[in-house]
Image 1 (cartoon, rainbow, N blue to C red):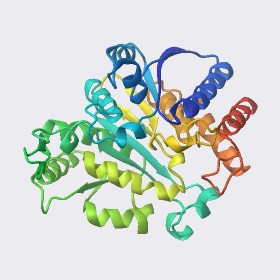
Image 2: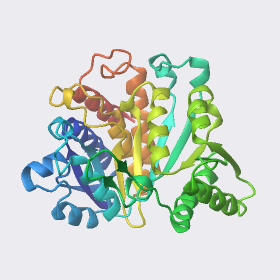
Image 3: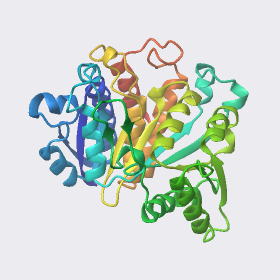
Image 4: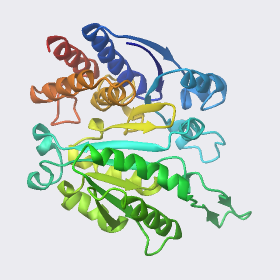
Length: 354
């Protein structure tokens, strides 16, 4: 198989963790006789520093001409700490999602037996947890207009807008995943208060009638935020809007014991982007201490979702799990002693030995 991958390392620890994910993909190439081309592009603070644009046209054209996108992380303190900055790294990520039509964000959440003690939650609550969050990604309050501040800066406002078609599009994706899992979808909304949530609930309930074999549960987001922590094993596929999905998926990261273990996929009609859910962790940049596993697992999702290479994807997952079982982890997991590159090298070694 010949495929072209756009590689966007981004900021902070992005280049280091992306390097390990690419090394793993190269090991897959060699073992399974595939050929992947890696073409690098700028995004975020790295792009601002060189072009003044957090998502340059050249990067957009690279993404459009590729079969999949592997992305590291975005963000830089020099912009975070400057409230007057008119251009910010995160604008590049939002622009990329919007311009590429990446409407569905998929975040798998899974507890690993070897990491149960790394979570602040009780073992008996999280053992066996295995669900995905399907988050609408390019509408809602992050993209709605008008937004801004009053002239005297004492009033601020944002706008949340959703259309029925946008809701149906992401709902279809959630039910597709449920068909191949435990056949349960949980909609998270705030339909007792928000007009947009009422449209979500009406639309999803109507759509669900086509699938009598799939259980639909509707929960308020505040109640679900508690149950994700107290009863995580009850969930299979969580479906929700942009803001709620952003919060609930980050909250769910405590189940795995580390943000460094959670991959994600952002899927559009023509292309998909794969990235770890964590940020750029600038304090660790250049120190070779960041956990690369979420990025490597994102590469596994890339092989499965974009290229249909299920065996190869499972080989990566198995190698990651073996690395954890044998203690080859970074400091964020059980006070691990391995560096970023040591973890990546060990996962490559395990893939080669399969």
